[in-house]
Length: 366
Ligand SMILES: Cc1cc2nc3c(=O)[nH]c(=O)nc-3n(C[C@H](O)[C@H](O)[C@H](O)COP(=O)(O)OP(=O)(O)OC[C@H]3O[C@@H](n4cnc5c(N)ncnc54)[C@H](O)[C@@H]3O)c2cc1C
Image (cartoon, rainbow, N blue to C red; front, side):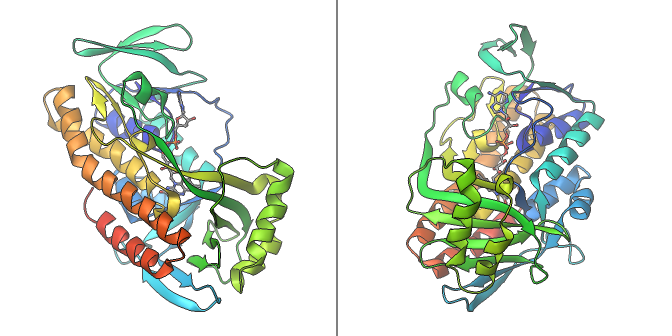
C-alpha cells in the first residue's frame, strides 16, 4: 500500500508492480486534481531512473530537451555556462523541461498499465505493526493488513507522523514564483539571471511554452490574493536588466502564476518503522534550487523495489534501501539549503560552483 500518488509514489508503484508486487495506492486528492506548479526540470538522474521504467523517451518527446544552464550576472552580462552531464548518452539531452500535469499523466498511466490500483480521496489515519504485517486504518473506516506500507505523501507527510518519525519543515526566507509563458525564441536552454535582490530564470517546457521562475529573497512566508499574483510577479521581473526583464510582459494570465515557500525537510535517522517506510519529500525534501527533488523521489521508487527484491525479508530490504539512499539524499538537501543561503547573500559565483559540483555528484549511480 502506497500513500500519495505523486512522483515518488507513482514511480515506486510501477517499479514494485513490475517486480511482481500487488500494489494499491491511497491518494488524498480527487482524480480531477490538476497538479500545480506548472513546470519542472527532470535532470539527468531523473531521466536515467525513468529510463529503467521505460519512460525517459516519452518524457523527452513530451517535454523540451535541455543541456546547458546559462548564467547572467546582475548587469545582464554573461556569467558562464554549465554543461550538464548527459547521463543517457551523447545523443540525448542532459535533462528535460516538462509541464507537471504531463509528467503526472505519464507516471499515472504507467502505474495503471502495471496493474496498480489508485484509490482517490482516501488517506491513512492509523498505522500499527503486527508481526510481519502493517495494520492500516483508512479515512473511509476500512482496515487492511499489508506486507509493506510506503508513505509517499510529500513534505508535510502524515504517514511520517503516524510512524513517529519526527522532523521539522524549515522555511528559508524565500518565496519561489513560477509562471507559464510563451517560449521566447532565444530560450533553448535553462537561463538563470542574478538580480540585485532576487534571482530569476526561464525553463522551456515545449516548442511553444516555457516557465519563468523567480526567487524572492528575505520575505515572510505567506499568501497573496490571486488577483495580485501576476502584477506582483511582473513588477519583480521588470527590475532585471536584459532578457528576463522582457519576459515580464509575457506574464499575463493570473491562473498561471504560483508562489510557494522554499521549505526543506530531512529525516536524519530512521525512515522506517517495521515494514512501513517513507520516501520522496516525506523523507528528504530539498530546496528547489537544485531542481532535484523529483530526481531523488524517482530514484527512491526504483531503489526501493531493487532492494526489496534483493533481500529475504521486507525489513531487511527496507534497511538496505535506507542505508543506500540516506547519504545521497542528505548531501543534496544540505547543499540545496547552502545554495539558498548563498543566493540570499548575493554570493552567486559560489552558488553556481556548488550547483555544478552537486549536479556532478548526482550523476554518480543512485
Ligand atoms: C517551486 C518548486 C519547484 C521545484 N522544481 C523542481 C524541479 O525543477 N525539478 C525537480 O526534480 N524537483 C523540483 N521540485 C521538487 C519536487 O517537486 C518534489 O521533490 C517532488 O514533487 C516530490 O515528490 P513526492 O511524490 O515525494 O511528493 P509530492 O509531489 O508532494 O506528492 C505527494 C502526493 O501525496 C498526496 N498526499 C499528501 N498528503 C496525503 C495524505 N495524507 N494521504 C494521501 N495522499 C496524500 C498529494 O496529494 C500528492 O499527490 C520543486 C519543488 C518546488 C516547491
